[in-house]
Amino acid sequence: MNLDTATPARKRVLLAAPRGYCAGVDRAVVAVEKALDHYGAPVYVRKEIVHNKHVVETLAARGAIFVDETDEVPVGARVVFSAHGVSPAVHAAAAARSLETIDATCPLVTKVHKEAVRFASDDYDILLIGHDGHEEVEGTYGEAPDHIQVVNSPDDVDSVTVRDPDKVVWISQTTLSVDETMETVRRLRERFPTLQDPPSDDICYATQNRQVAVKKLAPACDLVLTVGSANSSNSVRLVEVALDAGARSSYRIDKAAEIDPAWLEGVTTVGVTSGASVPEILVRDVLDALAAHGFGDVEEVRTATEDLMFSLPKELRTTLKKSGGNPGRGARRELSVQPI
Ligand code: SF4
Image (cartoon, rainbow, N blue to C red):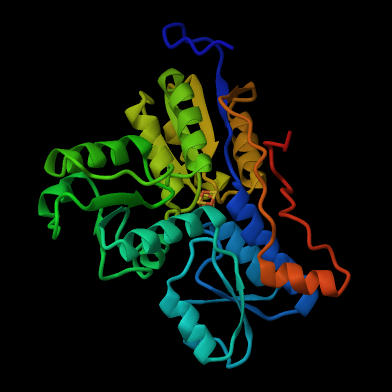
């Protein structure tokens, strides 16, 4: 594969792999679909099940009702918690309304929640690197609000205060820029030299893999298009990562119709990737639109192969098993990166 930046040749597309759906998104979307199949509409979903407009609209058309909070769900009804996770207070509010809950929190987010609980019980000051107001951060923070403070970026480091500088640990949101997070940690460590690391990477495999792939193709690209919604943290990070890695321009689009033809003027190589909540059909539409502009030559740039899959939420598994339905794992339909 020619990733040469010096010899512009034919118009072409470099297509990042891995891209698109991760195991946690696949599981969450399949959970809502199976709940609709089994229980019938409506099925309530607290917040967007995953941060993708197309996915949310498609599920809404099938009978999912998206709400902001559990008090909008009728007493005793069924509600699915999104892949981003919820705090214990949300579980308590759901129990108070006797809601039947299906918890589609990604297991990799649950892992971070457990870290927060464990470090809080050991009385650490926990520095949660992440974006204030993001649902995942709200959920993790809610596990131990007395011990956690949110650090948004390297610029926040100077304002951090802790009780004991020798008893501080950092954890993070799963969908951050790896490089920026490491810069935040570096600055935190300047202030707190014995800062403890989390037991394993909190930025998840899918976020990391998508960033590595886009970093590889970006230097050869005049333009990188990331398919993903504006509230998708990992999609927005891909736009930034592409620019940092040398792409001359980089935009996020929800769908093919948002491509501005002016972006393609004088362009030879277009990179294409998609966030972890994006179904492959939206990428296919973008490739078709680019082909219509003369970019029909598509080369894949693969940096990893993914085969991780998660079991469906246990509440759903148990019900499906009892009824003789299929309690299997997420289906991974439309995935371009097939399980090996
Ligand atoms: S991006 Fe990572 S943490 Fe988020 S749902 Fe996907 S696998 Fe889970």
